[in-house]
Length: 322
Ligand code: NCD
Image 1 (tube, rainbow, N blue to C red):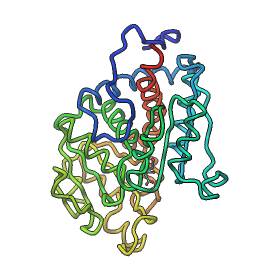
Image 2: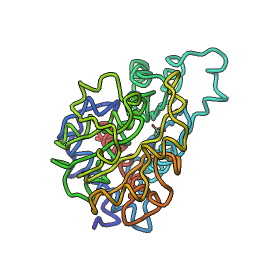
Image 3: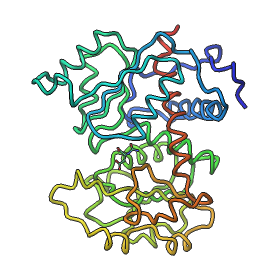
């Protein structure tokens, strides 16, 4: 158990070789292991009554969310505050973007105020990476379109590790709208790098165009797709990204692809159930399955989200603390 005073780990600091966290794609297995180790430390620390630290006191964190968010935004905010950063949220709706200022100019302007870190979520794939050219601070991608959501995959991996001890050779079924899910994509990259076996489950029209390049199995039926799984990860249908890609009604979708109690009963008895949220109860997952604390780790994922984000803030500010 981590000691309450022992939050500053600079003595045992292992260098993190990246300035930004843009995606899992750019990370090596040892980078991922380092983040997961640090996250486990912060997870324990967060279970203590006093969770605060002044490790990053005097540094500033800007959160720029151009898309809706509940858990990602709040957990980045609480993570920053627990690390001692001054956290400021940018309000896109009332900003000068509405007056025609470009994203690049917005980034450059905010960077001139001297933040150590900008956490950015944007609806366009690649938009977060493009901001790097206009800032000197570290950037964390909090989701860019259907591309990547690296901290979600890291918190999912850290949660799986707590329950299964290792990622290597685990059977992980990722179920639902893979095509539009940045969570799925980041998870696929991470789990492949760490040696897990991945099965993507769901209808063909919700599978990504580059399916054959992703090193995953594909099974259409949920009953077959979760057989033998150690981890069942359910995903929301990203209706806002579907375009002309029509899907079933909510009732039909639940009948064919929803994780009901009956279906879960046919899976391995120690399979854990995950969901990144926000969930649509009784569409992709039955409400009672989501609430079943003996199988569902959904709220633990949220708890882990704060720890992983504290770990990332720690690692990405190492160079300016030296
Ligand atoms: C996801 C996202 O925004 O990509 N949510 C999250 O960050 N936990 C998934 C979703 O919106 O379905």
